[in-house]
Length: 68
Image 1 (cartoon, helix red, strand yellow):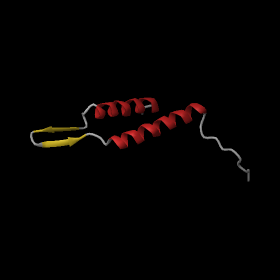
Image 2 (cartoon, rainbow, N blue to C red; image 1 turned 120 degrees about the vertical axis):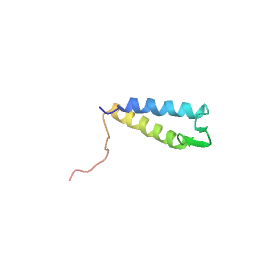
Image 3 (cartoon, helix red, strand yellow; image 1 turned 90 degrees about the horizontal axis):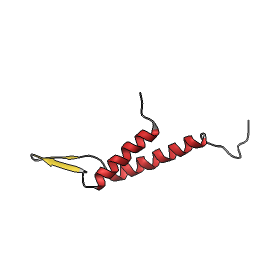
Image 4 (cartoon, rainbow, N blue to C red; image 1 turned 90 degrees about the vertical axis):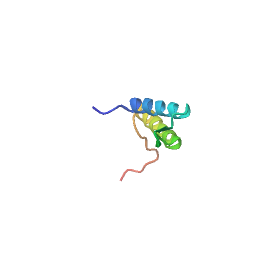
């Protein structure tokens, strides 16, 4: 079962909160791991918010189109 857009948005927002609270990188026994790029997470959050808004409106609207 795939995640809904709302579930994906919640997951991204949780990741953003973790990064903002200082959990972006972790070092252990000389190894360092970076979890996520904050800029990428913000872009993904914006994308998902727009998709959710579009879905709640009923999809994409075309205005001023000329039928063939």
